[in-house]
Amino acid sequence: MTIFAVVCAGIFPLFHVGRVWFAWFLTPFHTYQWVWPNFRSPLEWDVFAVSTYGTVSVLFWYMGMIPDLAAIRDRTHGVHAARMKLINSKFGKAWERGWYTFRKYFYGTLSMGWRGSHRHWNNYEMAYLLLAGLSTPLVLSVHTVVSFDFAASNLPGWHTTIFPPYFVAGAIFSGFGMVLTLMLPLRAIFGLHDLITQSHIDCMTKICLATGTMVGYAYGMEFFIAWYGANPYEGFTFVNRAFGQYAWAYWIMISCNVITPQFFWFKAVRQNLWFVWILSCFINVGMWFERFVITVTSLANDFLPANWDYYSPTLVDIFTFFGTFGLFSVLFLLFIRFLPLMAFAEIKAVSPQADVHGHEHESHITPPTE
Amino acid sequence: MSKPYGILALFNTAQEIYHAAESVRDAGYKRWDCITPFPIHGMNEAMGLKRSLVGAFTLVGGLTGFTTGMTIAWFAGEFNYPLIVQGKPFFSFVFPFPVAYELTILLSAFGTLIGMFLTNRLPRHHHPVMDYSNFHRLTDDKFAVVIETDDPLYDEAKTKRFLEELHPAEVVVLENKEEVKA
Image (cartoon, rainbow over all chains, first blue to last red; front, side):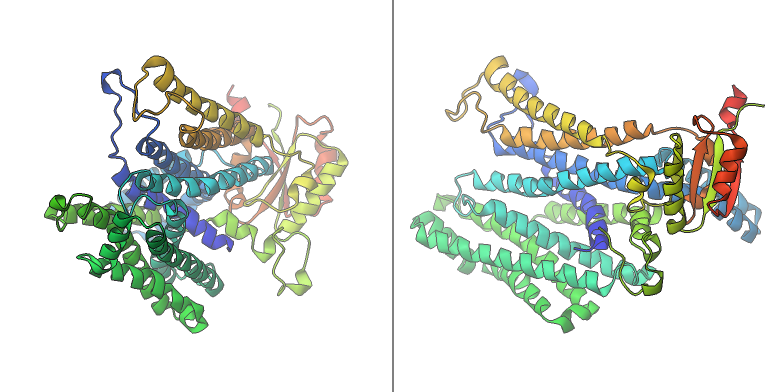
């Protein structure tokens, strides 16, 4: 992975968490009547997993921005002076003065008095490394614990040991799909072609290919175990999933998640950004249907045929779903308006000019980063 | 007139400040700093800095988190209100592991961030370096070495000459405005 993809991928999950968090925060948390929450239940583990994931993502994201916020803080005055020269109207000047005051205090407060001292950078880089190291097992654990919510129940189709790795692969797959969907338009709008290069996009599509194929393997393995396990309920669930009343959803999931990423084997596809963007949208759709298939098909046809029914979303369900789009978009647009889109300091640190060991005469050689 | 904060030398490139830092280190100065817009690789050695202490805060945070997680589960399930659920034991080291694990990471992360702020003595409202007229370039694309007046080797004329020999873009004496006010 290249550093820019890490920067993007490090910033974007915050908003993904914002959305997923929304849904999982409704987990019951019984602290009334002196009864403690049940620590033997995966639902309780999930409360800890998701809240930790959200909090640590915010910390990591914020700490990564401190030096960049300081850089913006130090530019605020010059930008204000330049703008005041261009503005003629009285109202315009008053408006700009108001904005200036806001920017001064907003970036001044958030940058925490950062002044770029190298004694600070020494501690900062160590802290950044540690937070990155802490976040990696956290990503694995949060999806594992979410999958426990399903896997620890007795419902056929949920009660499988493959769930933790399968969810982790699915999460990385859909995360990269989502980042591609958002990043490609941003790159075009803001002209970030020199910062997010073709090789970064290549790497991201290859990760989609790898994790998408893993997800495909997990789908196959579920079916194999359902047959091999010789449990009639489990077997029925899976046959019902693929050929029952929700077959349409199942085959959308399979075609979007397993077949779509296979196009990324071809270099011509990876270099055609329109194609990459459309495929990344298919990945998002496919991963949405994966959650739909897992949740709904198992619940719609459980042990008692008298309980069987066909689930279709109500108006409230649909509005809630679109509401999450709105929430995400608002946060995301506010972010690109007010906060650094790319990590300035990290980009400067890998520029050829930052290489102190001198390759002035061989500037075509990429600077060593280690 | 109060004592100035120190002398600042401005450099245009990362290479220049790297070599300047090596010279200042070799000259034996102790209370000095480099102001750079991004972390320069190899600068820790050039400045003679020791390994950061942030890791200790992370470790303390992590151990606290793990202990807290296990203690909560034990206190709630075994000690304060034992409740039979699904015939499972009141306490074991196995089932609260996800909780303890998550709290380990949570408090390690807080420890790391707090450790970064404590070791850097941040946040702070102001610093004499920020009074420098070109300070806004130091978070952008310029680099500076600052030698403080508190350094035992500091001598206004000698230190100034020493810094000028490093071929900086400019050398400036930084006033200590906070001290003036007091």
